[in-house]
Image (tube, rainbow, N blue to C red; front, side, top):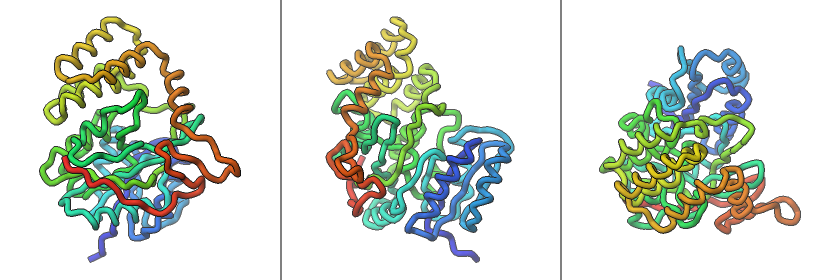
Length: 342
């Protein structure tokens, strides 16, 4: 019987052969070599299949679905095909730094949590700036839903999780699959539902291990999701989150999608929703107002200018938003952090 690899890596993709090839090569370059890479092509896509075939690594498996079902469905298909105890997720437009899996496996070995969700910080790369997210790690006893949604300032990113940072037991990803049809907040939805299980906790590696490419000239599903659908999603998970988290999501995430309507009716509806079912803070009200009053592009420019750090003299190092120094070509020695209890 073949010996199972240490980690299975699932990469959903469609019609982006150059990007997915870059992503896969970053996985195959990991310092942990005992892996399998499962690329799930979300529908017929001959060009992507040809590009992946040229990689020529026996650790790569390609599954092509007969029709499009969306990224959550493609991830679920890949997880069902995984043979390792651990499965790590990677979006096709992101990259891993070489030590990503090694750092996460070491963190998994140190914990007593039966089924830990292992995440990490990432380097958020936009056309204007580059900075580390999340800016802080969870505090002991902090509810996971509040860590991921509450702000300590006007800009998101204090607490954060992104799909390409996640490694979890394969059994957990099968027990709690991704929600098919959900267009935005897929990782938040999955983490909240998974963390509601009695044997699950979130652990975060303090070192940034993922490059999250925010190319603004490329269409992103997350920017086109109707706010009404996200409100229905939020109402569905209300039993799993705290009132503070409910208010924060309503007044920040959903309001960011609804604000372009410039509708006073929608403004009032979301405000009433947050107050009826949540517990808004003063910062939630301030965030809500600036989202509705300031155009998104201007908000993003201000955020990146404040949080980003330009190249230091010499051009070979950058300063991360939380004060850590990040090498331009690699990240330094691993720092393991934050075993978070729900």
